[in-house]
Length: 155
Image (cartoon, rainbow, N blue to C red; front, side, top):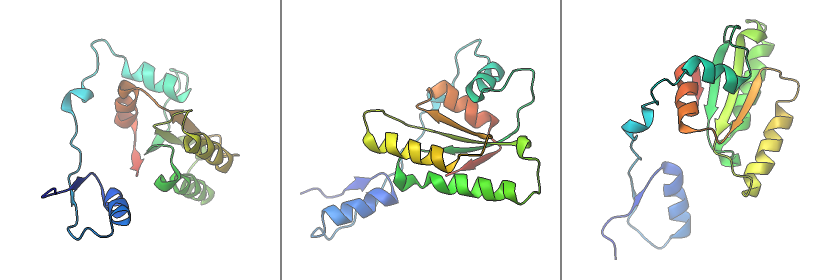
């Protein structure tokens, strides 16, 4: 028997307890580390051009304040909360809505039914909000660029 079991999050720890209720020793959490070289962008990479293209904003237009939700398209991630909160924030009439953009980005696989269904649910929830962008399965370079231009990161 293993002397120690490692999981990568509190959520996985909960799933572990549900799957193996007879095991008394709780698993330890080992959070995955960042791979530093994944933050190095190719030489000549034009971040400004990429972010404008990614968000569908002409390069001659200024970028709004970007609020980003970066998660897999799964219901357990509760991405809908970001959309509902963003709608509520804009509804307070404290800011000009065009000055803000909510970006929902993350892992998406058309072969995973939950990803497809949840994307459709989120798109329906965001209906009427012209300042929400959905980015599915963006590249590592695009993710780094998006994070660099993000003003508020939700998780």
